[in-house]
Image (tube, rainbow, N blue to C red; front, top):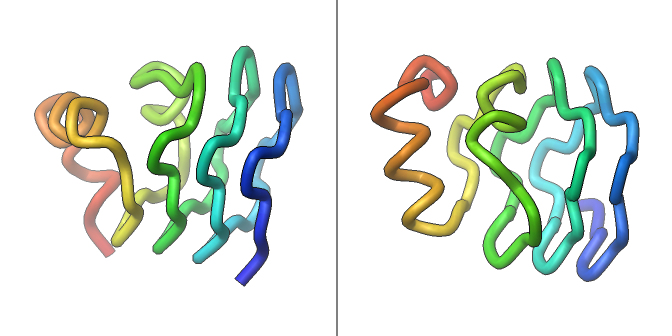
Length: 84
């Protein structure tokens, strides 16, 4: 498991990056491009500046750990991201 705990990924270009099962807790995602990224099983809890708009463009969030508010919004609007 890759550990990015507390990393500053502000404005990072993370297109199509494989972050399966990565620990991304307390990461700053402000303005990061996440299009096509694979977050299967990743821990995204307590991340900063992570938005529904950013996550709606990823490849998958299957089995990912997210803050409840973000998780509920994504499940309503982008349920396909949580399917295998």
